[in-house]
Length: 242
Image (cartoon, one colour):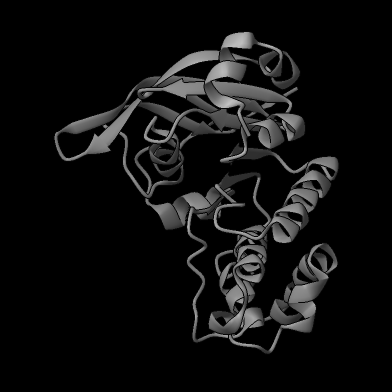
C-alpha cells in the first residue's frame, strides 16, 4: 500500500512557543487515520502544519513523493491536499453552490470544460449531501450549523483531494447532524478517500478509523490500529469517556 502522506520530525508553533515537538506519522492510500488527544495537545496545530496554514520550523511533510512543507496553502491544495478546518468557515454571503465551486477553483479548467467538470463534481457532493442540493441557491450564512458543516466538507471534496483533513467536523452540532456527518465520513471511507480525522468524540473516531495516533503535549504518545487503541485501558481512561 502506497504512502499518501508522511511527516518526519515536524516541529511548529506560534511565535516563540513551540507546539509540535518532532511529530512523525504515516497515512497510507485509502486509510482513515485519526488523531486523538486532550484539548491543547496540538492536534489542530498539526493539521495546520500539514496543510500550509502554518509553516513547520523543522522536519518534512510529504504528499506522496513530494515535499510540501515549504509550499503555500494554495499550492498544497493544487498538489492534492484539502483541509476542512475547525469552525467550518463558509463564505456566508455566497450561495451554497458558489461556495462549492470556490472549493474547485484550482482544479477546474479556466475556460473550456469548466461547466462539464463542475457538474460532475457537484453531482458527487449532492449525492453525498442531498440537503445541499435542496439548499443550493440559498446563501450559506442562512444554513444551520450542520448544513454549514456539510458545505465545508463538500467544498473541500470539490478539489478532488488525494488526502482530506477533517478537523472537528462534529463540533457544535446537534446529535442528529452529528450522525449525518459521521455517516458521510463512513461513506467516504468506503469509497477509498484517504483521510486524517480530528474528532472530539474519540470513540466515534476510533470506530471509523483504520489507524490512530495519540497526541500528547505536541508529541506522539502512542500509535496503533484503531481497534487495538480502543481496547487500551490507559487510553480508554484518559480519552474515551465519550
